[in-house]
Image 1 (tube, each protein chain N blue to C red):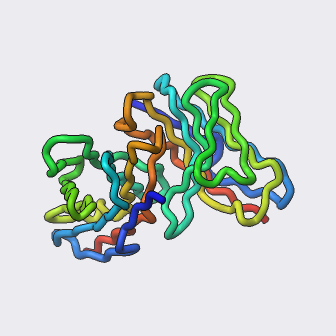
Image 2: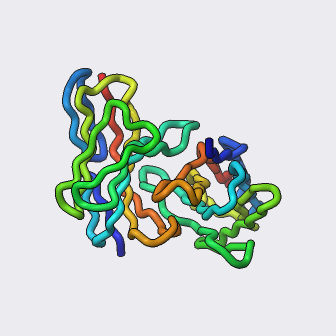
Length: 115
Length: 114
């Protein structure tokens, strides 16, 4: 059974703080993803990684960075948090199969409030 | 740009009634199609997916979806809903030119009433 865990369910930070969101998966998946979820907008991809130390920008990378030092762990970093980054953040992982047919497995999400 | 449209943001439905959630995507030569469900306070989980073959796809919990290439649609249906089907449902599309990325629709919130 695939398990994707996220370090916090709820987080409150102040504007300008550096924020780390951690994600760990236990199924040896190559691909890992960070999304933000906002009402009416669905999920939007921030960054993804298909291997250790590899990263690719998604659709909305501005204001974020990521780190993947180990295969099972993918961190999302908000260098200087702003109020418009208040959102639900979802991490996902998947096998690296050919052609995009793989299922993504999601963590429970971190609800971040930036004051 | 590639896009996925879920035409209804909210769908109230009575228990044991049928439900249909609509999903349309921008046209492409090759797509894979997914429906995910998010129960309250949980992450998303896969309901079903279309990769190839039969256009009618059956998923978990009695849901099914039909791929219609000419109408670029992938509507989700369930003939009789339960209270436990109250959740948000997301349609997602993998476009062949997009590498590993999925494009998600805006979500449809289903509220099942007794």
